[in-house]
Length: 122
Figure 1: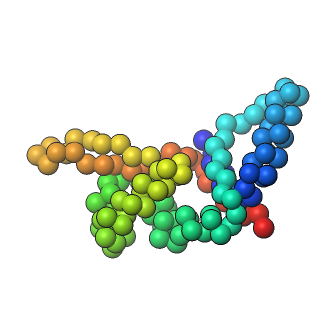
Figure 2 (figure 1 turned 120 degrees about the horizontal axis):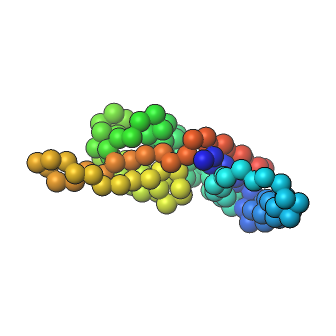
């Protein structure tokens, strides 16, 4: 699946939705895609900070635990956990719990999309 991130707010979302509906009315084949829309480029920049983008890039290469992410990125675990939670809410990451024999459970982080496209409309 592909993920496109836009920064054109409600008006851009409305325009894209209408274009998609017209294509469907014409019987055109629609490729599955997930989309995230921010109100403007400033809001997008607040969420997609350099540290969060770096975190996403690491997870995109390989599923990993929050603790391993924090260690690999040389960041505080609570900060990484907070960033993972936010990126999961936005649809960029997914988490799940797995058994860690002798140590309880561990939260694993994955990137659920194959391709990510940022579209910053001004």
